Image (tube, rainbow, N blue to C red; front, side, top):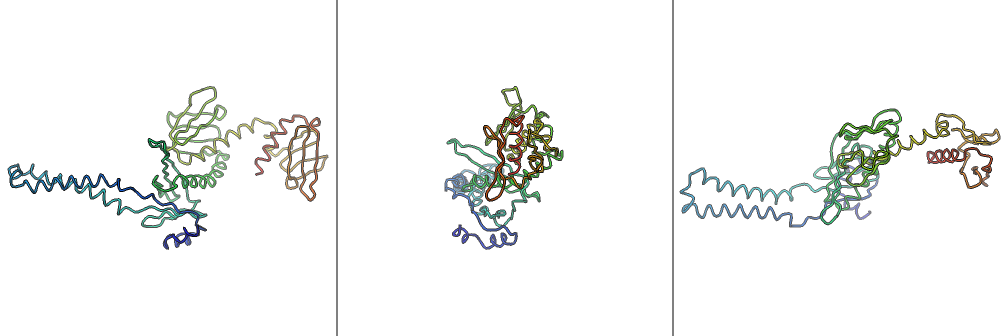
Length: 349
C-alpha cells in the first residue's frame, strides 16, 4: 500500500485528511478501454465525411437541380453523422475518469472533484449483478449518502466486485444494529419494495403480507430474492435484488425476526428476557448470573458454561480456574437449559 499511497493525488490526500478518513487501504480505478469502443464513432465520422465529400463533388452536376429543401438535407445528414462520430470519439476523452480511494473510515470518490463519503454517511446501497454471454459476473452499485447525493460505481472498475462487497459490509455493520433497535421498538423498516415489521413481512407488489410464523425461509442470490411460505413449494413472492436497497440488512433483519420468534416459543428464554430467574434443579439462571446453592455467581465471574453428555459444567474466571459440575440427572428439562445457555452465550458475544 505504500507504493499506492505515493500515487494518491494531493487534492485527494487533502480531502481525506480534512475529513479524518484515516489511513489509505486501496485504490480502485477504471479498466483501460480497448480502442474498439471508438469504432462506432470512427464509422459515423467516415459516413458523415463521405456524404459531405460526395455532396461537394456532385453539387454542380447533380444536386444543383434538386429543390433547395431536398438539397439542404444532404449536408445536414452528413453533418449529423459527423457530429455523432465526434461526440463518440471526444466524450471518452473528456469524460472524467472515476477513481475510488478507500480509507479506514470511508472513501474519496474522485472525478474532476473529490467527494468524501464516511462509512457512517451511507444510507442506501443498491447492487445490480448481471452475467455476460460467457457467464462472467458484471457488478455495479449505486450508493446514496445521507445528504441525498448519489454515487455510481460502474462495472468498469478493476476489482469493482471487491469494492462492492466492502460497501455492503460497512453499511450492514453500521445500519443493521440500528434497524434491529428500531424493529424492537415497533417501527417498520422500509426497503422500497419490502417492509419489515415486528409481526410480519410486507411486499408492495400485490400488497401481500406474511406473518413471521408463516415464513418458511428466505432465498437470496445475486439477482433474485425469493420468500417461501410454509407448506408452499413455490415462492410466495419473488423480487429483483436490483430494486431492493440494503439487501444484506434485509436478510439480517429476517434472520433476527425468525430467531426472536423461536425465542418467544421457549418459556425459559422468555422468562430470562423478562428479567426472571429460571430454575433447573440446583441451578437458577437469571440476567444477573447463576445461583448455585444460594450463592450467586455473576456473569462477569463466569468464563464459560456448557451442557455436556452427562453433566453441566461452569468454569469460573481466575488463575487457576475453578469448575462447578452438576450431573444431568439432577437437571430437569435439559433441552430448555441447553437452549437458554445457547441464547445467553450467543448474545454475550
